Image 1 (cartoon, rainbow, N blue to C red):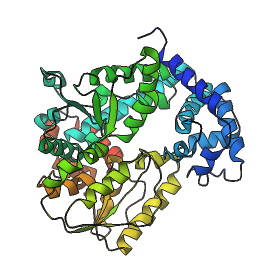
Image 2 (cartoon, rainbow, N blue to C red):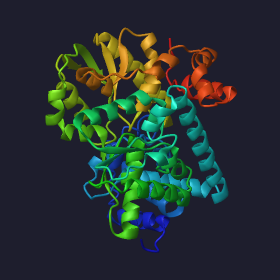
Image 3 (cartoon, rainbow, N blue to C red):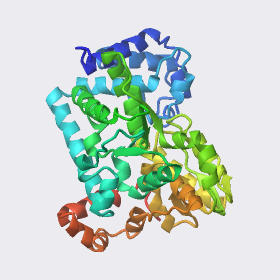
Image 4 (tube, rainbow, N blue to C red):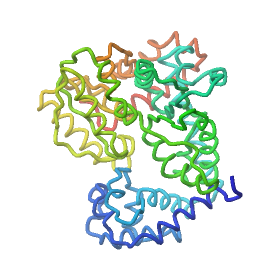
Length: 438
């Protein structure tokens, strides 16, 4: 590793893209955030020019600042660029520059630390309300140090943090890999943070330190491959952390592959395991932010006997549902329209890929004539694998006190503070409802 700091390495990457950018505005024209952000009347070339101003000075035109703030990480801008620029990365760094111009480092660090602690608490509490210590350890939590294998695994499976709130999804991923004979080690949770909270508040140094620490832990598999679940972590690692570390040290620590792309690469091996017929009309809840994942999900679902895939003809935007929070009115509209379209199409299930999608949508199952499930539940059903969706079961109760009572044994087992648990349930589970229930 050279003496170049993480922040300096990021800066040189920004400079290279600034030199390559022609300010043509194609990235702006391709972006689904422009209209709902209220900047459709501004010149696309002026908007991207303003982004470059922000990157250089921390300030720029209002339309450019709005565009940076409204980024849903859909990735359409990357496909639109003919010059090798990653506009999504530039918008991330523009938001960092705006945060730096707004707050001094101590305040940015405080904000990042608060977000990290709050998220870590919510992940810990919501996972412990659903799982005992043995299962948590299988997901790389609890006594994680004791789980380090004597021999390096073929792969590292990186969960990220927030899928642990929906542990049945992560457990199904492990069950599917077990059935395929994949040798892996699980890493994830707040102790393996990608640093995105600190990056979002403009604390680049701390973000780089946390990301580099996690990367070092994940960089010891035989294959040099990390299988990832969380799309936000994937983008943070592959577009921010790993390129910067490569500039610092001259080598990539590993390659990272989203889980569904990993499965599609092994579809010939997976297909014979899809033995059970799953007679369902399914609509896929889609987000295009990680290239190829939606297409991989569709290809895998179509390999399952009995599945009929229905196209609801709804817009697909953003990296995952959580990233649409920057445009809350649009988010509610998209979710409302999709639920209605699924009902009109007579589907048996609306199937999401990512965990944040599932958390936000699952309670709507109460109000609509179809199930809301994760794609791995469908794959698992065909393979004879099942994991109970305890999160949805609890959220459907819509009563924090009832949920606390229902989880009494696990609250005692994990020595959770009841008041803290109730607050996390109220805000982090029941409050995670962008579109209100009927």
